[in-house]
Image (cartoon, rainbow, N blue to C red):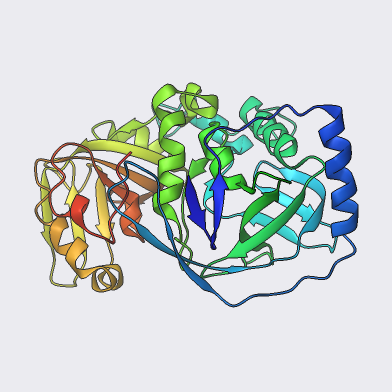
Length: 333
């Protein structure tokens, strides 16, 4: 059981199928909720945690206490509300049709684009949309925000909760992650609740449930640099052993996963991130020889590289070192 914005949240045991009576009752409640206006409440400082997770991530959310009706499920991470607001499920990255290129990455730069056409039906995309539709069908939803509240397209970035009479509120992000229809992620100025998000994702990833059964979402090996270069621009999970960890004169910290930083996979931590999480950053320099998992977008800087914007992007798998003990650090599934 996890507590977000001051109320209990269920996500681990999600029942997608509901009987007709429940649906009719929920739709009636939704109709009433649609007549109510939104009321903003002040931020509430809470803990987002799950039993067995070492690090606890402070999660300050501002809650919209009045429910809204969902007009349409746009995709596996986007809702359209009755007031015209488009809501993105921050923290739960749904599959995208462009992910299909990662299922069989090209071995050479010149072997075609590998990008499917716009009319392609990508099964994980359809499965995620249907799962989200089932979760919120005939239900009222409540939004809660933290940090950056909108993206460049004007979408509301929010944690979404389904009103469930007599059983509290269901955390939609957690349900999507636990059922294997999304991956945990954050974005600049919005990495709230990452411990809970990672904990929700872990069971599905371990059991290869949902999207995790598809090769497009396989965890990549750091030593397969050619494959990682092909996947640049995509969100990936990469595992490997740190060969060298160093802080250069500019203040950047680099974790190199091979002997040649000019071509091997690397991780880069900007000075600003190091200053914000000083104890965690210092612990990174002790990770030489440790097995770690990194999540983020693959970029090309000499070899393939992931830039770290938040400690939750690095998980220590073998020797936890200082990183696993830091209050700012990632949860360890």
